[in-house]
Length: 151
Image (cartoon, rainbow, N blue to C red; front, side):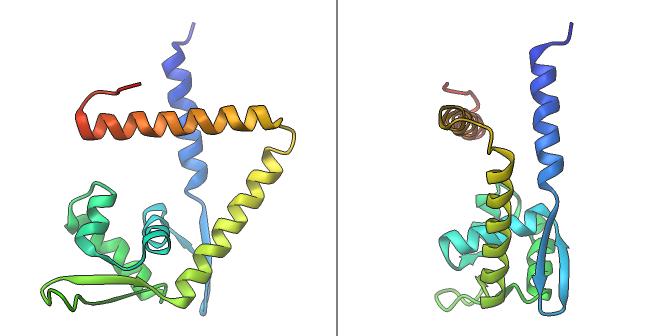
């Protein structure tokens, strides 16, 4: 008999694999973005312009590893990299109008897919699923921050 954690790991892997499919439209046509590049765009949309170090910290990555994703979104015209006026040694990444449109379209598309996929679920089932996802994410965050889950 399979261990329950094996089944959970398989289900998480399936979710992650499926969430990799991110397509956005740019002035030059539709492109597929890496999940991390899409994450950067969402971070900028949610929180406004960010220093590159803050972006790396938000994703718990070394700043050098975030550079490739930043270059990709800048090259596509979805974000703009400028010198930080308060510290000219640092760079700030800002979502362009095109980038904001692309993020909103992709988020709307994903929410529409969730509406379709969860259409047969009751409100109670949706609420339970949401609570479980929130709890899982809190546990992961606590583990990353403190080394031990609290839930």
